[in-house]
Length: 214
Image 1 (cartoon, rainbow, N blue to C red):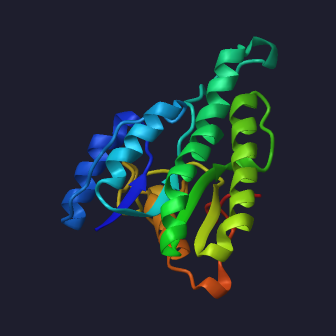
Image 2: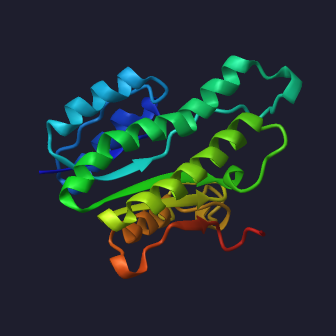
Protein backbone atom coordinates (compact mmCIF):
# COMPACT_ATOMS: atom_id res chain seq x y z
CA UNK A 1 0.00 0.00 0.00
CA UNK A 2 1.26 3.49 -0.86
CA UNK A 3 0.61 6.31 1.57
CA UNK A 4 0.58 9.87 0.30
CA UNK A 5 0.96 12.51 3.00
CA UNK A 6 -0.21 16.06 2.40
CA UNK A 7 -0.17 18.70 5.15
CA UNK A 8 -3.02 21.19 5.02
CA UNK A 9 -4.45 23.70 7.50
CA UNK A 10 -6.04 21.74 10.35
CA UNK A 11 -9.49 23.26 9.96
CA UNK A 12 -9.71 22.13 6.34
CA UNK A 13 -8.32 18.61 6.69
CA UNK A 14 -11.57 16.73 7.16
CA UNK A 15 -13.33 18.50 4.29
CA UNK A 16 -10.44 17.92 1.89
CA UNK A 17 -10.10 14.29 2.95
CA UNK A 18 -13.80 13.70 2.30
CA UNK A 19 -13.59 15.38 -1.11
CA UNK A 20 -10.55 13.39 -2.18
CA UNK A 21 -12.05 10.11 -0.99
CA UNK A 22 -15.26 10.82 -2.87
CA UNK A 23 -13.62 11.93 -6.12
CA UNK A 24 -10.93 9.26 -6.23
CA UNK A 25 -13.00 6.47 -4.67
CA UNK A 26 -10.07 5.83 -2.34
CA UNK A 27 -9.43 5.49 1.35
CA UNK A 28 -8.11 8.76 2.79
CA UNK A 29 -6.87 9.44 6.31
CA UNK A 30 -6.81 12.94 7.82
CA UNK A 31 -4.34 13.28 10.68
CA UNK A 32 -4.17 16.39 12.85
CA UNK A 33 -0.63 17.48 13.61
CA UNK A 34 1.23 20.38 15.16
CA UNK A 35 4.13 20.86 12.78
CA UNK A 36 6.01 22.97 15.32
CA UNK A 37 6.06 20.14 17.88
CA UNK A 38 8.60 17.36 17.44
CA UNK A 39 6.58 14.85 19.44
CA UNK A 40 3.40 15.58 17.49
CA UNK A 41 5.20 15.00 14.20
CA UNK A 42 6.82 11.78 15.38
CA UNK A 43 3.57 10.33 16.72
CA UNK A 44 1.69 11.27 13.57
CA UNK A 45 4.21 9.49 11.38
CA UNK A 46 4.13 6.40 13.56
CA UNK A 47 0.51 6.07 12.52
CA UNK A 48 1.28 6.95 8.91
CA UNK A 49 4.06 4.37 8.60
CA UNK A 50 1.71 1.69 9.91
CA UNK A 51 -0.33 2.22 6.73
CA UNK A 52 2.58 1.70 4.36
CA UNK A 53 5.44 3.34 2.49
CA UNK A 54 5.37 7.14 2.18
CA UNK A 55 6.10 7.76 -1.49
CA UNK A 56 5.17 11.44 -1.63
CA UNK A 57 5.41 14.17 0.98
CA UNK A 58 4.01 17.59 0.12
CA UNK A 59 4.71 20.14 2.84
CA UNK A 60 2.55 23.25 2.69
CA UNK A 61 2.31 24.45 6.27
CA UNK A 62 2.75 28.02 7.47
CA UNK A 63 1.58 30.13 10.34
CA UNK A 64 -1.59 32.14 9.50
CA UNK A 65 -0.81 35.79 8.81
CA UNK A 66 -2.84 38.94 9.18
CA UNK A 67 -3.51 41.13 6.16
CA UNK A 68 -2.85 44.07 8.48
CA UNK A 69 0.91 43.64 8.61
CA UNK A 70 2.44 44.71 11.94
CA UNK A 71 5.50 46.91 12.19
CA UNK A 72 8.72 45.03 12.86
CA UNK A 73 9.07 46.63 16.27
CA UNK A 74 5.60 45.34 17.20
CA UNK A 75 6.33 41.68 16.42
CA UNK A 76 6.82 39.60 19.56
CA UNK A 77 9.58 36.98 19.66
CA UNK A 78 7.12 34.15 20.31
CA UNK A 79 5.16 34.98 17.16
CA UNK A 80 8.33 35.17 15.07
CA UNK A 81 9.67 31.87 16.39
CA UNK A 82 6.33 30.12 15.85
CA UNK A 83 6.12 31.26 12.23
CA UNK A 84 9.66 30.18 11.37
CA UNK A 85 9.19 26.90 13.22
CA UNK A 86 6.01 25.98 11.35
CA UNK A 87 7.41 26.96 7.94
CA UNK A 88 10.83 25.36 8.25
CA UNK A 89 11.44 23.33 11.41
CA UNK A 90 8.22 21.41 10.76
CA UNK A 91 9.42 20.64 7.23
CA UNK A 92 12.74 19.46 8.70
CA UNK A 93 10.98 17.10 11.12
CA UNK A 94 8.67 15.67 8.44
CA UNK A 95 11.50 15.14 5.97
CA UNK A 96 13.51 13.25 8.60
CA UNK A 97 10.53 10.94 9.13
CA UNK A 98 10.20 9.90 5.47
CA UNK A 99 13.72 10.05 4.04
CA UNK A 100 15.04 6.81 5.64
CA UNK A 101 12.23 4.78 4.09
CA UNK A 102 12.71 6.46 0.73
CA UNK A 103 16.44 5.71 0.81
CA UNK A 104 15.71 2.07 1.61
CA UNK A 105 13.44 1.77 -1.43
CA UNK A 106 15.48 4.02 -3.69
CA UNK A 107 12.59 6.31 -4.55
CA UNK A 108 10.35 9.04 -3.22
CA UNK A 109 9.26 12.62 -3.78
CA UNK A 110 9.37 15.53 -1.34
CA UNK A 111 7.81 18.81 -2.43
CA UNK A 112 8.02 21.95 -0.32
CA UNK A 113 5.60 24.77 -1.11
CA UNK A 114 7.07 28.25 -1.09
CA UNK A 115 5.54 31.62 -1.89
CA UNK A 116 6.42 35.09 -3.14
CA UNK A 117 8.21 35.54 0.20
CA UNK A 118 10.64 32.72 -0.67
CA UNK A 119 12.52 35.04 -3.03
CA UNK A 120 11.78 38.54 -1.78
CA UNK A 121 11.46 39.82 1.76
CA UNK A 122 8.02 41.38 2.03
CA UNK A 123 7.72 44.56 4.04
CA UNK A 124 5.48 43.98 7.03
CA UNK A 125 5.69 40.21 6.76
CA UNK A 126 9.07 39.53 8.34
CA UNK A 127 7.90 36.31 10.02
CA UNK A 128 6.59 34.74 6.81
CA UNK A 129 9.54 35.86 4.71
CA UNK A 130 12.17 34.47 7.10
CA UNK A 131 10.38 31.13 7.34
CA UNK A 132 9.96 30.79 3.58
CA UNK A 133 13.55 31.85 2.88
CA UNK A 134 14.77 29.11 5.23
CA UNK A 135 12.44 26.52 3.68
CA UNK A 136 13.95 27.20 0.27
CA UNK A 137 17.45 26.63 1.66
CA UNK A 138 16.35 23.37 3.29
CA UNK A 139 14.93 22.19 -0.02
CA UNK A 140 18.17 22.91 -1.86
CA UNK A 141 20.27 21.17 0.79
CA UNK A 142 18.14 18.02 0.75
CA UNK A 143 18.05 17.90 -3.05
CA UNK A 144 21.82 18.03 -3.29
CA UNK A 145 22.31 15.39 -0.60
CA UNK A 146 19.67 12.85 -1.56
CA UNK A 147 18.98 13.06 -5.29
CA UNK A 148 21.58 10.37 -5.99
CA UNK A 149 19.64 8.00 -3.71
CA UNK A 150 16.53 8.31 -5.88
CA UNK A 151 14.72 10.93 -3.79
CA UNK A 152 13.35 13.86 -5.76
CA UNK A 153 13.23 17.02 -3.63
CA UNK A 154 11.59 20.06 -5.21
CA UNK A 155 10.58 23.55 -4.14
CA UNK A 156 7.46 25.07 -5.72
CA UNK A 157 7.05 28.83 -5.43
CA UNK A 158 3.37 29.73 -5.64
CA UNK A 159 3.67 33.40 -6.57
CA UNK A 160 0.11 34.66 -6.39
CA UNK A 161 -3.32 34.30 -4.90
CA UNK A 162 -4.97 30.90 -5.26
CA UNK A 163 -8.65 31.11 -6.14
CA UNK A 164 -11.37 28.52 -6.70
CA UNK A 165 -11.00 26.00 -9.56
CA UNK A 166 -11.45 27.28 -13.09
CA UNK A 167 -14.74 25.39 -13.29
CA UNK A 168 -16.19 27.73 -10.66
CA UNK A 169 -17.58 30.93 -12.17
CA UNK A 170 -17.77 34.27 -10.46
CA UNK A 171 -21.17 35.87 -9.95
CA UNK A 172 -20.44 38.45 -12.66
CA UNK A 173 -19.77 35.71 -15.18
CA UNK A 174 -16.00 36.17 -15.29
CA UNK A 175 -13.91 33.07 -14.70
CA UNK A 176 -12.08 33.12 -11.37
CA UNK A 177 -9.00 31.88 -13.23
CA UNK A 178 -8.77 35.31 -14.89
CA UNK A 179 -7.89 36.97 -11.60
CA UNK A 180 -6.22 34.22 -9.56
CA UNK A 181 -4.37 30.92 -9.79
CA UNK A 182 -6.33 27.74 -10.48
CA UNK A 183 -5.61 25.12 -7.76
CA UNK A 184 -6.25 22.28 -10.21
CA UNK A 185 -3.57 23.65 -12.53
CA UNK A 186 -1.15 23.93 -9.62
CA UNK A 187 -1.90 20.33 -8.65
CA UNK A 188 -1.06 19.21 -12.18
CA UNK A 189 2.38 20.77 -11.78
CA UNK A 190 2.95 18.89 -8.53
CA UNK A 191 1.88 15.64 -10.19
CA UNK A 192 4.21 16.32 -13.12
CA UNK A 193 7.14 16.86 -10.73
CA UNK A 194 6.43 13.54 -9.04
CA UNK A 195 6.40 11.72 -12.39
CA UNK A 196 9.46 13.37 -13.93
CA UNK A 197 12.17 11.17 -15.41
CA UNK A 198 15.30 11.01 -13.27
CA UNK A 199 17.38 12.36 -16.13
CA UNK A 200 15.60 15.73 -15.95
CA UNK A 201 14.43 16.54 -12.45
CA UNK A 202 13.10 19.94 -11.43
CA UNK A 203 14.56 21.31 -8.21
CA UNK A 204 12.68 24.60 -8.19
CA UNK A 205 9.82 26.06 -10.17
CA UNK A 206 7.78 29.23 -9.77
CA UNK A 207 4.11 29.46 -10.69
CA UNK A 208 1.95 32.53 -11.33
CA UNK A 209 -1.09 33.56 -13.34
CA UNK A 210 -0.42 34.63 -16.93
CA UNK A 211 -1.98 38.02 -16.25
CA UNK A 212 0.26 38.68 -13.24
CA UNK A 213 3.23 40.94 -13.71
CA UNK A 214 6.65 39.92 -12.41
